[in-house]
Structure formats: C-alpha cells, structure tokens
Image 1 (spheres, rainbow, N blue to C red):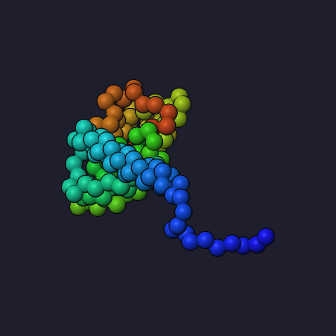
Image 2 (cartoon, rainbow, N blue to C red; image 1 turned 30 degrees about the vertical axis):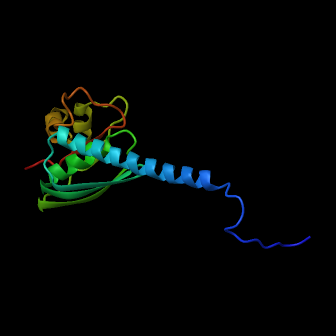
Image 3 (tube, rainbow, N blue to C red; image 1 turned 135 degrees about the vertical axis):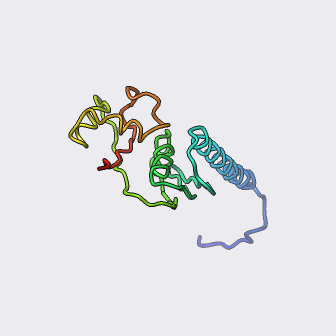
Length: 159
C-alpha cells in the first residue's frame, strides 16, 4: 500500500450539505451581528445620547463605536451605555469630541456599594453622591438603583 492520487473534483459529492450548512451558519452570524448593532443603537437612542455619524461594529463581545460628540461627558455616557449591556465585555472607543475636557474615572459597582459610599471613597465626602448621580443620567433613573458589575462615571470635581 502507499499513497494514491485521485481527481479532486471527480466522484460523489457528499460534502455539499456541510458546505451549505457552513454558508448558512455564516449568514446567520452576519444577521445576528446586524441585530446586535440595531439593538445597541437603540440603547443610545432610548437614552437620547447625542452623537453624530454613529457607527458600530460588533465582533464577539467587543463593540467598536465611531462618531462625534460635543462633550467628553456625552462620549463617556455612550461608552458606559454600550458597556453596561449584557454580552458586551469591551467597548473600543473611536468617538471624537468637539470640546475636549478632563476624563472621568470609571468605577465598577461592588456588592454593598451606594452612591454615597462611592462618593466618600472618591471625593472624601458622602454628600457629593448627587455629582455621581447627575454624571450618570440618563442611565441612572434613581440614585438608589445601582447594581454590582455596573460601571459608573466618576467625574472630576469642579473647583
């Protein structure tokens, strides 16, 4: 016995169905990504976050966001709105800002946290919690409704 050569394109085509299944799976993956993009754009629209020329790409659990905003705060809110969606692990920020400003710190909420506890840790004053609440509107509707794993903006205090 040894190595035998055959014509690759001759013979019974038993692989046609698996090729067709692979093509269908690829089409389904594209359709799924398109649905994810529509849903993620819906999050931004629902929160009424201002961005021009919004474009999103989704690859696995990474969303890449393109566009232009007027302020650093709007940019950060868009990043947080996308990143706080189940199934999204990373936001690749490609947003440009018209009026640059100092960046906020992002903080992941831990079990037992409250906005006042977070304010105390970051600002040294628990009564500064409204600054954090305002910085995270419209994602936050109530200062008492935060959850572990949620990521919040902690803006620098203005003098």
